[in-house]
Image 1 (tube, helix red, strand yellow):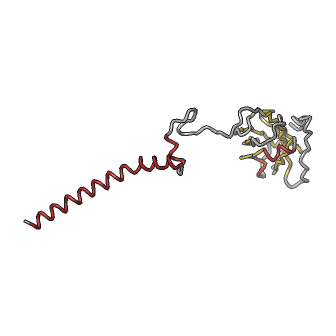
Image 2 (image 1 turned 60 degrees about the vertical axis):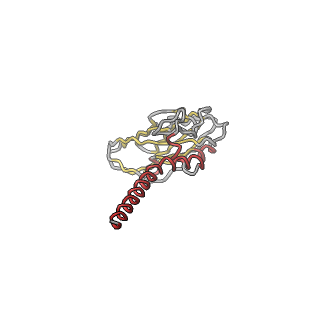
Image 3 (image 1 turned 120 degrees about the vertical axis):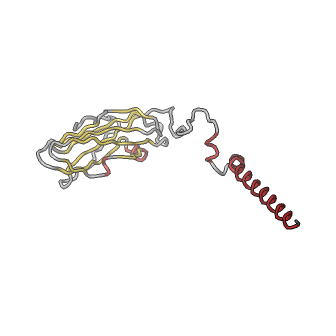
Amino acid sequence: MTLKRENFRMVRKLVVVAAGMFAFGYALVPIYKSICELTGINILALGDRNIPGATPDMPANTQVDTSRTITVEFDANARGPWEFKPAKRSLQVHPGELATVMYEFQNVQNRRMSAQAIPSYAPQQAGAHFNKLECFCFNQYTLEPGEKKSWPVVFVIDPKLSKDVKTITLSYTFFEVGGKTPAAPVADAGAHGLIGAGS
């Protein structure tokens, strides 16, 4: 009988220990979140807070400077027998805001060609703050006779850009690879008059 009692006591202790371990494991998540919020060591703990103006899936972009608007003008220079132009001539953006413009190209020749674009900026100081995330100027392209292409330029203007700059001209010169590579056009910061020079 003594052995049975000892076994029964041991089973009771094991059940209590197992129940305690389960309860502790279940309580770990809220305890962990509370500790993280108090110490600030885990930013993920802030995701459950009700932050005004923020959606649960996409937090607000605090990098966008909505107090400023910059006009970005788009220019296309075609050095050769093809058509090259921006889908839009200009776009108004806030610094820090993601923006996209499409450029259209057509090989109007009766032969295949390979080409690439060179970008330039006016004023020149804007170049260091004009961040392209996607751009056709990074690659060379081969187009068949009569083939048309549309390419995006995805960009963000750094909010650190001088507040004196109200207008930026992004100019592309499209040239045939294998021929003489032209120099990038020098844009006049005061004129912004390159628009449509080769469209």
